[in-house]
Image (cartoon, rainbow, N blue to C red):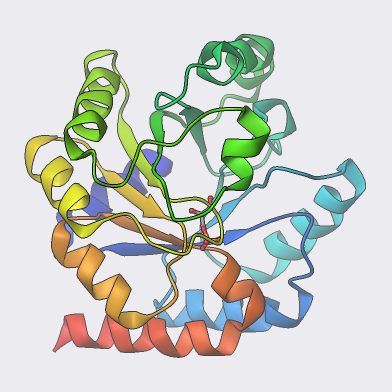
Length: 247
Ligand code: 1GP
């Protein structure tokens, strides 16, 4: 199901949108808003994951999400051992912008047999952390340095290496709650040169940013913090973004 979602995202003329739900956050008040967004087609998928979580929180959130969201839910985990067995697919992230072996391959070895037994759709994804203007949780937790936002050549070479190693998608991550989204020129360069879906997240807060990143060639936009803080405003922005595309 995740392969199909990414394939469709590439075919469409504007970016698909995924809302990132963190199991450790309080999203209950936004749940009906999210359900409506999925129903109306303003939200194309839910990504599920975060850096910090507990098992009990995950179960409660998962049950609630599954009951109320009539759309695909894909795992976007910091630890693949925490992937829920009934998820619709997994973005299996390797942090190729960093040089921490745990996040390049170590965690993947630990989770490999478990994931194989689940039999879910796994998309190997080159995860590039780009400097978003402040220290991100990902950078701190993984003890890695982001790629400077003006180093488009390094970002391109890193993503290209990921593709050469067989990765099926690129995730450009400015970091959750980033001050600056991934630079438009970086998205443009990578999307024009690489033949895999480009997923972009971190700091997206407005319909204008969605439009600019989509125009630059992003295939999927991921929005987390802004939705947690003000779900109704984000849904209004999504409606503006999607309607502008249809006109
Ligand atoms: C984080 O890219 C996602 O992994 C989303 O970032 O929370 O800033 O929207 P935000």
